[in-house]
Amino acid sequence: MKKNLVTILFIIIAIFALYLTKNIYGSYSLEKSTKACILAQKRTTAKSIEEIKNFCDKEIQKLKND
Image (cartoon, rainbow, N blue to C red; front, side):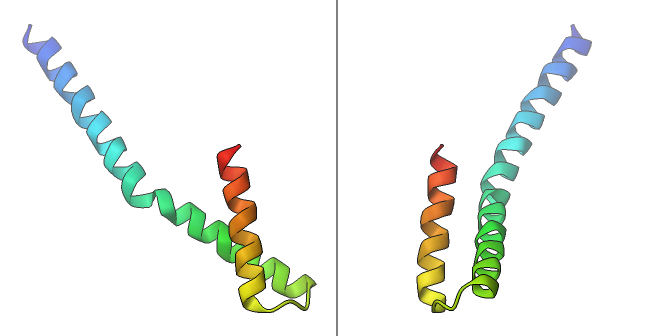
């Protein structure tokens, strides 16, 4: 019985830790993708930074929703 209790407690703590990690670091990948897109677009086009930011934000949101 005690062995089962330890296992269940470990699983609950692991699920909680994964939930916190997702919330804390979830936006990190999005920011990195946006910065990479802006850098690539700036090297290939002559648009302004604001136009490139808007374009990248729209494209990443489209990919995120799919």
